[in-house]
Length: 181
Image 1 (tube, rainbow, N blue to C red):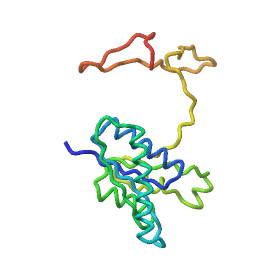
Image 2: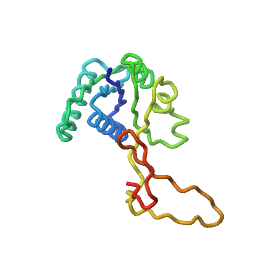
Image 3: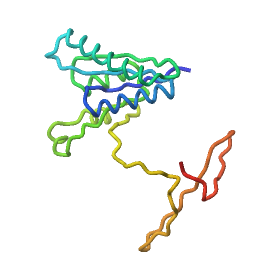
Image 4: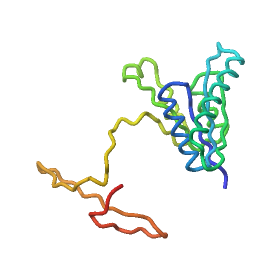
């Protein structure tokens, strides 16, 4: 079975670090994914800059993999391309036959996006495969085993969730007191 090709846009920003971590988590859990980390530099930069950036990213990835110690081999490539970010990310996705693209969220306001555009939005709209826009989790931790069924107030109606598990090629309905976690 062919391996999945996953393109990870990386620009050394905090949000790109989140995308990088998600990609590594994915590859460590599912080693049939090949990661393609790509950093884009503009045309005013030279090839020595591209080589330095590629080495900087490789050092960062090596440290993350050593700390993570995946249970299986993880295949990855480090690409540095010269051009505009959206075109180069989509170009790499086309070149490798990407099955998924991960981009960090930009974190700008709506006005900032309107004035400056957004790489993640451009990739999202131009990609020919699924795109995952990644950002840092902002929701607080919720211990789901402590979720309590309540009666809706004020005339609101909703259906209670049904709980299931999939085991031994069968879907089994679980009782209402079964924990969600």
